[in-house]
Length: 226
Image (cartoon, rainbow, N blue to C red; front, side, top):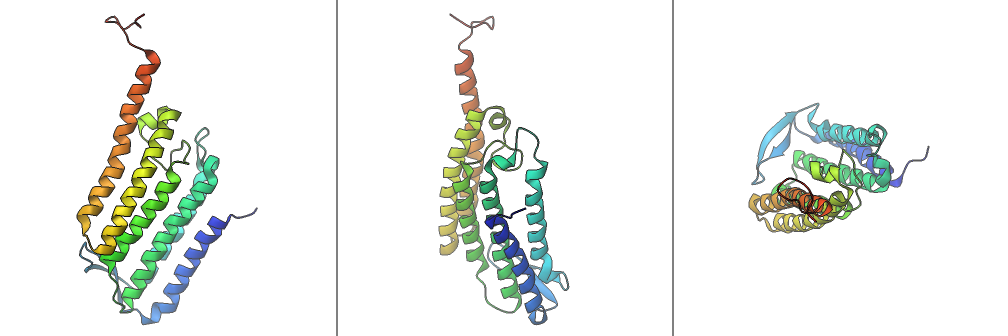
């Protein structure tokens, strides 16, 4: 069975992440910095031997889960209908974790890493990639804007994801620029909140409008007017 380029790329990121952890293991301290606060100050450590391998293990687990998703999708909600897009998202998520892994290892060996800038910038890029893919999602239970109203209507699903894709790209741009400029968490949280909440509200009101147009006005007894 052939393996797609996106899967090869994802698997390559996982293998290289483990390789980096092994190569740098001897240079790393006994406790590895693994968490930073909003100001970019270390506030969490993980001791050896797990510290260097936490993110590579998370990457491997994510890769295996995302490979399994198309095989367990219920009938009528198959991920295979947008398999290439799904694998692109998989590669983007694994690549983001690879970036985090590289930053953690660099910080562990003493390199000064501006986490408060680099991580939001990476999140922004990830949002922009997801936004570009979002309009190509077909109805499924694993990714996308899965509200009762998008799952109930193909038209609501399509139009909501087109809007959501644009908002995710815009939010990603805001997060990217804010991260590079050191704008802090407020612009990031505001952009993410707008991108997350707006499509949900839009799907509800769009569904109500479509259903109202379909059934037409009713009289006081619940029957359609003439």
